[in-house]
Length: 397
Image 1 (cartoon, rainbow, N blue to C red):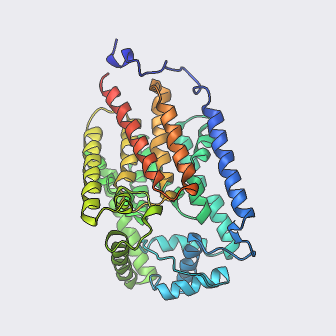
Image 2 (image 1 turned 180 degrees about the vertical axis):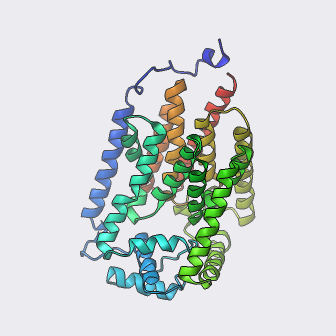
């Protein structure tokens, strides 16, 4: 009998169904998020303010950038021009700006989102962008509860509240992993190439593809990335890439340099160290150490005989850990490693306290609106620790 079968931390291996309480807990998380969004709308904190005016949120910035593209403006990184377009979208002035740090090809997508009027586009974005995410998580779990569990993940709340794109990031990462598992490397590469709209979430993918000798996926990702760069330059003009470089310099100064960013809202290791008063050098040292450890973990796992579910969980949680710039809405991505972890648990039995710890991570994410703190990083580290624990026990077989 294998060593893992003797271990007291393993729960009895189920032949079918989920452990008691999983379905009820998922339903409760869905209800909690629905109640929060409904309350936010009634109190004038979502879509419309208390006076009935449109709220200037992140989607307003996306829609305004898309309208600029549709109007033939290639200078989507002109903050003054973009601020004026955002004010026109919501119908009133507001303090601050919504800076755009995305590469030019992202604005080809938001141009499509800006075709309808603002209010319709806003509601459609919030309603439709979760669909590919839900599909991907359900495919990972391959279970009738997949849709419910996808909807239960609390980071969806932060994403919906400001009309962000976390669901798209999660769908691309999860979709690429599913495509690799099912022997569709070209499709996987295309999805990884599309992920370059948030390149800091894809830094570990080249390493994993090389370790697994997934050369077709690697070539497909490179070709997709190059094609997006060329098309965006043709549509927006080559100056758009110069504007993107300038925007990155601004982001580097504000987030990684002079400390003007609101670190309490951010969820990375780097920004948490800065929020706690650590200097830039210390923050980079700690973040860099964590990223190096994640890279080594991916290297070992993707070269070894680890099950694909655990390989995918390690790579996708590593994408979150390694990202130095992450907000709560970005942590929709964390649903991907959590889903692969749950799938492996259903196939081989759950470890003791595993589901309870995962529930704790979900409660941290759900609590973020109440506490202005990097609770999402805590959730990320819990999920990473659970995956590491399962990987170690699996290696003992």
